[in-house]
Image (tube, rainbow, N blue to C red; front, side, top):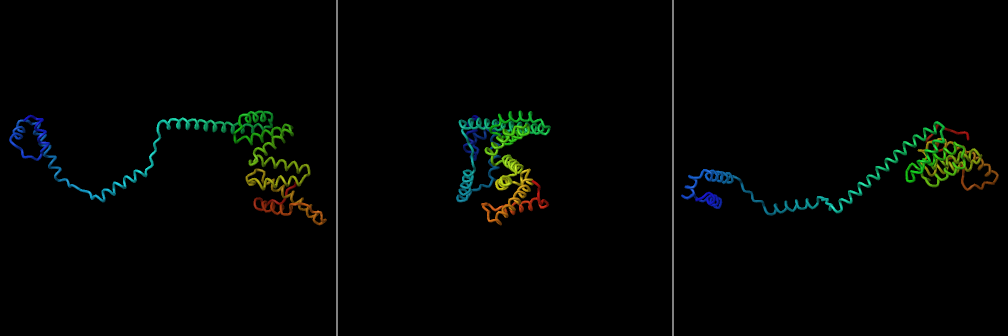
Length: 275
């Protein structure tokens, strides 16, 4: 018996009684003898292993549960034909966003420099820098502020008509900004200076009714000026009433109470202000 035939025979029938032919080969071939010994050891070791036969109902329930869990787990797969264009689009968008952030940061630094020049009364240089920024900031959130600065520089340089034109444009184009509120506030101041108390009160009241006035830097002055205007108008209204000539559609007495309540809430120590 050769080795190949011997190995095949003992693996096909490992528990078969060793016949003379097998014994004879084992005595002559140490390699097959070692192979046979290892196989016998494995068989003996397996005999002590407990065989567990799972219950069919429990086994199927466990398999079903695992299948359901696998189905519930979200799987993300995107074909390469879609993944590559998506990645390109994301890279382009990221580049645009970073470029926008860089522009806004640069504009912020430039605006700080403009304010520094204005503090030094260098309004010509401020105006020049402001106009350059405006020409490159058509979609910038800084545009209302830049336009307001442009108006302020023109005003300081004596270009009153140009300043008024720019202020009105700010109020029309960006009505919800604090810069628009400041335009209405400045108009109110001009009305006061010209003696038109009623128009000044309208401007101040408009700001109170349409803006978050607590966040405006001029809020305290605005409130006190409005109270002064409404006090004057309420006194006139009372005089007209006594004469039977009151034709005002709005009661200045009510406006006075409203602004007085606001002042009492935010500035209880303030009582009046001179126009």
